[in-house]
Amino acid sequence: MLVNNRIALVGIEMDEYQVIKSNYDGHIIWHQAIPKIVVKNGVLFMEKENGIGMLPVDKVIYYGIYDNDFDFITGLALWNGASFPNAIGMMDCRLKIPCLVKALQYSKFGSSRGFISAKAEVNVENDTVAKWGNWHCGENKHRFTGNWESEFAATIEPYFEGEAVRIMVVGNYIWQIKLEGTTWLKSIHPETACFMEVNQDLLKDTQHIMKQMNMDMIGTDYIICSDGSKQLLEVNHIPNITRFEEVRLAYLETVIDWISK
Image (cartoon, rainbow, N blue to C red; front, side):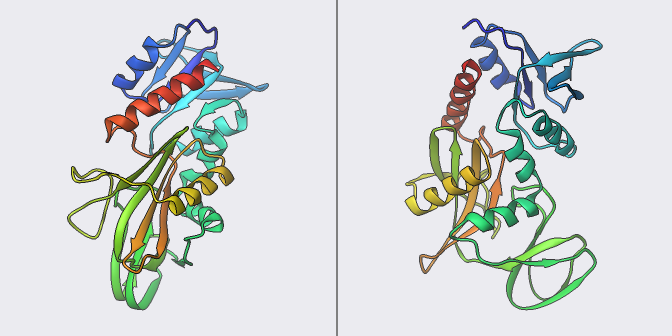
C-alpha cells in the first residue's frame, strides 16, 4: 500500500503501532503521550516524533484516555479533519457525566438519574450508587444507603441487581461481553469476563446512541435485571480493545482499512 498521506498515531501502544506500520508505506508520526498541536488555516500541525518543529498531518488515529486529553480532542474537533474515532464524537463523550446525560436522551433503557454537588449531602432510603469523575473500570463509584456527603459532583442512581454486560462496536464488528468481578463492581478486566450471545435490543439501543453521538467505536454498559428489564449504566467512548485478541485484531483491521480510504 503506497499512500502519500501523513498519518499520526496518538496513544497507540507498540504492538499495535508495529502492525499498522507494517501495513502502511506512508509517513507516520507516533506519540504515546498527548502531543502539542496547532490548527491553522484548516491545517493540523503536530509536533515531530523526534526533533524540533511541527509537521502537517492528514489523518489522526487516537486511542487512549489521559488526564489531559480533553483539550487535544477539542483541537481535533475544531480541525474537523479525518480522525478515528470521530473527534466531535470523542469530545462530546470524553467527560463521563455529560456523556451519560446525552446518551440517556437516546437510550430506551435510560432511567432517570439524580445529581449531587461537591460537599453536598443526600439522604436516601434505598440502595444507591454515586458516580463521579471521568474514569471507568469501576473507579470513582460509591454504594450507600442513608446519609452521604459527596466529595465531588456526582450522579446518583438506584443500585440495579442483575447481569452486567457490555455491547462493544468497533467499525462493523459487534460483541457482547459479560462483565465480571468479585464485588458489585463489574468490568471487562477479570479473567472470567467473556463473550456471550448479543442481545438484539441492547445492540439496537447501542447503535442508535452511536449514530446520534457521531461515534465510530463504543462500549455501552448495561444491567440486565432479574425481571428482564434493562438499564443503561454508562458509555465508553474508547472501549478496551486489548483485553480480547479478537477485538484487538478487529480494531487493527478497521483502522488499517480506514487509513487506506
